[in-house]
Image 1: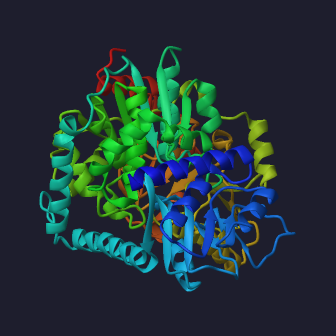
Image 2: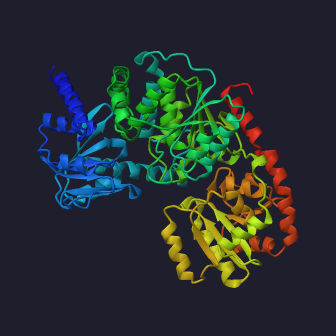
Length: 609
């Protein structure tokens, strides 16, 4: 009775706040919960933009010492009591007047380690946040310890795998327990959750973390374009983080234009419509049924699994096609719980054990738990990537379907000479210079420092060579400092990603990709399609992306000496470049044609073409 009264009080407060138009219903609900639980002085952390009137109304609330909001913040408000979120840095700027308790109007899954660290330094002791279907309070020190232990566990798994201490098919005790719990959970969902309605024939949901300018995201676009080409495909793209931080929606317009329904994964804290949806009787009932199950999930993904489960129950897809490890785990588990008859888990590279910033302790147990279900299909875009995932998960190679990346060659043709000339002039490339290009994310697995060091070596020795790298990412400032120190002026330039990728690839004399690991690199495929030879090194599916000695060169030793030699062999031999360039389009059409990829995808879905 007491809980019911509190719930009615919260909802009444929310309705009153909305009618007044000043206090957001989610904020009103959090304040009501804090009042009911005797929470005193508070700092409100609100990860969306508020008007000046809304901020003033919150600062006038009893017990609210300060407020954090998304920029822009009115400069007329007291700087002592107003802080700001820093979405690009996944952190926040705390105000001087700070309570020992932060009330965060968001879910636990969106609280980052940087946010926790900054709050601890400011003297914050606890945090209130949304937990699946109710507000919850935790010690900030406890949350920090959990983050640290989770990171140490991930790093430990990486170290053990690299020294051979974790053999294929075996797992540590904690991992084994997690896998057992997830397996039992999946097996029991049909007893614990209501039976799903029949799926809509032909309905496909693509699930992915973002739509940034990346290779996997480009393949989502290509797959959707191929599926929608007939005009009758029923495709929805569900994105975990679509509009924040900036750049996550790089391919949004292209997908919408192609006819896909693109949505962000919605939870109660997403917006007012999502809050009302959560408060509605059908969704509230589903969430209540889910809660006992979701407490067995890692807290980092429980909310997203719940959001996806509810979405799948409403949309009733025949196929859920998840891309990249985060969505493979979250959407894969949610789809199996929701009774989706075909669930594709699509790896786009080698396993996450090679990427410390991706790997989470729950990934391997979740993948192995899902392997016990007949609805699950494992997919990879290269034999090298599939072999690496198989070794990591202890699964036989036969469990993996290989679907090479697809490229619509009809829409990819070499740019005209006048457009190439204009492009090179725009970037300050002399007419007679030989241009080595790059196009990739500036993160550790791509080895951008090796790319830059190779070009610094070449351009310092040869006046007729230039380098142009299109990319952005966490290593950008380090690379800019390296180029500035080299003092080569504009001979090697680092520029933002471009939507004119085909024009840029046409303007390169040679493409260089020096990644440590790759799935099937789209940029190499597209370069060959427009007749630009590529020099490539690295593991995974990098070797499968070209024909060595026919369309490009694969370098076994990933160092500046070997890469510079390979580049010079092409740059100094125009005839060899022409032969490689002439062979590229036919090779791409045969191995990476869009129609072949779409047909293979539909076959894996179990659909007739």
